[in-house]
Image (cartoon, rainbow, N blue to C red):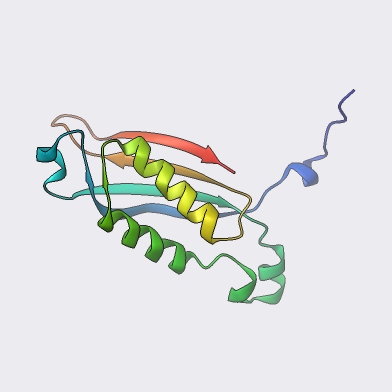
Length: 125
């Protein structure tokens, strides 16, 4: 029989990065990939923030400025066929380079008239 965890054990801290705009070449044809388009990313990075909060120390947390810098550099260097590939690449980049428990990546592109956006959402750990 599985024992239910109490609310404190289930709670998870997150760093949130909302609507980060990144230039990226994405599309399933050379014509679509010819020019970068602006994608919007929202990240929810699962990581304990307690130590950093108590110490008020940047070295005890995930430096979100470095996360943003790495993502922007990666996306401007590569070409992708699908936004799913972009989201997966972003998740793996952050998981590989930062000490985190998991990441939710939500990514949107505006690619059609009359439509606010099309997007994907993935969770990786």
